[in-house]
Image (cartoon, helix red, strand yellow):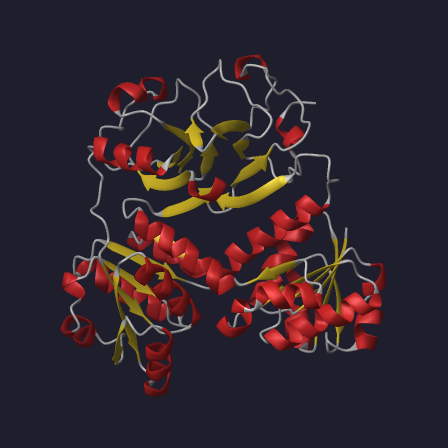
Length: 453
């Protein structure tokens, strides 16, 4: 596909990298020559210097012949204007990054008026991801499928855990059932395990099941952490506002520490039920005074990766049961991983997954079974795909044991009549099912791709 992407910042680089890896032809537009030079040195794309909202610049970028226009600058109004101008030039599909809460709340109206195909809000997506993690404190990462009917959680097998030395075909006897270990990370390797696979301490496992089954699984292996009731948020930016709204709606008490007095007033207006404190949350004495030792979870959401990592390490040392760290750069996540900080959230990755999922769906006609959602796991070395079988599809009604499914792919769950089924060899996939597949084969664009040939 021919794609024009306006905005060569952190978000633009990540999206262009993902799309270029999938073989798309991309032209990146930005007025900052240095940003364009950085992206051109790391990604196979064409670049054009200029204002992406300018009619002549978009014309020169070839928007009229493009399949998709994506606008991800730091200014919502510019992104919406880019898409509106692109529609006038003839592009059929447009994606706009919209971060401001006021705009985002009006998106049903604005989407129709501006002809937007997709509205991208990285901060809202990151907040939703964090709220899922806080629902499962025992997990390092949580991805949700089929409107929450199935979850995939990431968990590290500790020394002495009942899973150590266990063959997967004997898992049901050790746990309550209803779950599947779909992926195992062992060192640098990412494996789709079979029944004879033996788990070891240090393995990072990715477990699929209904939310209730996953809670029961953690209890059965002695790794269950009690529900989060009090959360401390460091930093009062957009992610904090979205996350605070989610948590308060779920009956969780929220305390936000923000160093700007003016912004504290804004937070109080938007989240009147939150406890908002003016102070420097990077000062250990402030965190102790505000009760970090008595909070169930600590979420670091400042604009500084370094501050987030250091304060999270302190929170962990002070005994906080669940710590979540927001970082903007993968390099910091990799370095911080050595300090046993298990839950990291990268807004740019969440946004890139949404865009890649949308682009893959665009490549299929309406009569095929395309991808409903896509999630990267294992540091981007595997993907989890959600398919909704609403039409004709290959191999329906055939027992899974008789199907020629790719060896690098696993059918992890089937959602039928609101129930999450962990499939066995005799189970079948049927019309109207939602199918969750895990694969180390990148670039799958439809349901048929999970089969050999």
